[in-house]
Length: 388
Image (cartoon, rainbow, N blue to C red; front, side, top):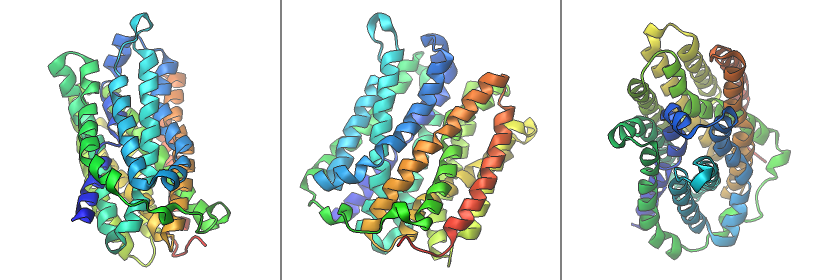
């Protein structure tokens, strides 16, 4: 019973790990106009969360060793809730920008810890159901992005306030805090899952191949979370319709992320699936920017299925390329630390190219190149080898 409840809680945590990205993107135009955000602030607010995922990821195994994985997850959810509450708050004459930045930074730090610890807990407690649990929690992460993208703009229209639309997302995070608290404080301290055993991942070619695959996946994923809605709106689609399109894309991500881990785990190796998914994701995003507007639903579908499955398979590599939970914890910290830290450059590239050219066209070509590189490292990471 406790294991089942833990599994439910892990899925519920996953349901809160992307709303900070997609909710802000859904009403970026309204926030920018009302709060008077300069270009540098928009760049920071779309990049800082992903950058902090990389900065704080290496701390997760250290904190888990000191306090226990469940307690760190609980603490991270408390910080995430606080960040979501602080983010839309106005700070007197200084306006919204200071707390918008601070709250967003808190959210990024909290999500970083959850990102690293979730797969290691799955590796530790669900060894007999890796494909199933990997699919469920990565699907929950995709669903989190879909919820933020699909409901934030309607909340803004209903309330007339972008601050209300953003602060709403603290509610589901707070609910998870209340549900998870008894389990977190009664959990035994699984010190062995984050102990000093395991391979030295920083010297492993396999670990670096998986990590670089993660870098390129993260570049695409966080760029889509931050910029797909603005791309669609710049192409003449209104805010409500753009939100629906992003939500449909992310719902398809959920389908891809639910199926992909179990499918990948059944293959002898993952070279083909990694390459195909990398190319699907990059071409779907590029066509959303460059392709005929009449085919936008096709591009959105291609992007959604590819990105959801690609994200899930990249995270599943943690479990498929390690022989034990110790190495899994180390690889998770490495690939997510480097992956998200360097991967956040993707959102910067979109912002910079848009500011430089006044359009998203150049970003579309850039992401075609990223998808080709992702296919190369997906091939290398997909070979049936282990981090030793």
